[in-house]
Image (tube, rainbow, N blue to C red):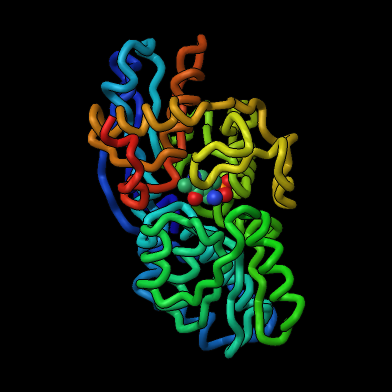
Length: 350
Ligand code: PMP
């Protein structure tokens, strides 16, 4: 159960009130995080497979590490720590959301034996569904724009997902439209997971990511920073941290326009706002330019040895801005994934 063993800590040294990162990676049992189902299960075999799956047991309990060289010059009472979600088995934070969506769908019977899980995603959520489908034994069908990066397409194929390529000019909104049409045409064959409107997405972060951050910081976190894609991470972690300490400040990160190139983030001003997103929860939205995000991803690799994705770079840019404000304390930025899926991008060479 979360709370029984400290896995990873970033805590203040009592002597000088500076922050000391203690890096320690541990995996814990997470029994008790989800309530056992009270109604009869629609898919008992698959549902129980979740509890015994070795891959599922690797999801969550990711490390939190303090930034050192990138954060030089901050006041001694301020620290920035990064939650490294690339340590999940599918390589991203979306393992948590996908697991929660699958678990809930199996519990309620929305995903029944023989049905296929369908969603529109070229990115990390698709990889997470594909991994879970392979591990638990259900088919996964994904709609993605035909210009999705070759690394992503190869990873999805490696896990055995069935891919439907949509018009690249129509982007992710176009892929969602195709998925909606497919789901409407064959409701008996398909479970449409719809990560943008599925409350099980933020629930994953309310029940796991948020409690981990609270525990790893021993309740000292003052600010939480996350990029906004579906908004699931911010909604779930934000609600949990606010319940524990209403003074915690929540900062969302946004790209500077609709064609931004920061994989995983959505420019909410020009996109369909996800049904799970509540703008009222967030204290502040910081706009980060793509070049700043890439430059920070490079610095994190070269100055911290942390090979993270571009949206993590964006979150750290925003976190360092917040950390320079007076009376900040402990800023936690979420790194959604590692840099490995972006290796073909030319900016690493700069
Ligand atoms: N960064 C990356 C790389 C992602 O894959 C995602 C998920 N879309 C996000 C950020 C945003 O996370 P969320 O959907 O929980 O807002």
